[in-house]
Figure 1 (spheres, rainbow, N blue to C red):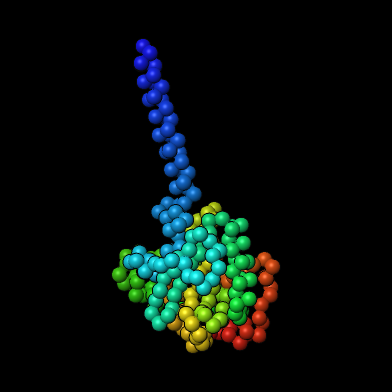
Figure 2: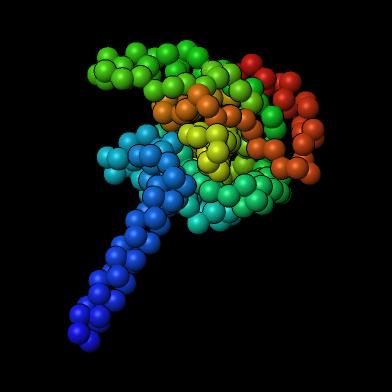
Length: 229
């Protein structure tokens, strides 16, 4: 009789553990979203070729603003660096830290980019092979231009790319290593942006870096000079 009671208790405890694990998995799935990787796998979302192994460690050219960071290398010194945040407060802190670093180490300005032609080219090439079509957002948006001796390029911020109630924030840098004429490199960088942006979700927002204490400020002369690249 004693052993039967003990066995029943063991069975109940095992059942309870299984239920708790099941609840945890369901809640974790709701948090992550259906078919989406955990936080450490999210930076690869905006790196073309990441699934083919074109994914490296985070670049040392910028401060470490997120533990979830990866980069992809491309021809002629071009590269993409992605920081992912699963919390808005961490994103805002990282955005401010990055912006302050950029101001101290190079020239930062607001840049309007239109990638409609580049994105159309990517769509025609990709969808000729695919039977499905991803959802796209705006073709024209503000970016943060950056020029320095080590690298020059553009920063974009993607917010809530998948679900409105999910906290998904990406800071993505599309740049070229070393000294470069950013005006001359912009057409090729726009093609790289379009390749990356191809998988963006239309529910999200795309914009430039906007730390709270920097909103409304910027190098107006540089912005006017480079607006229609």
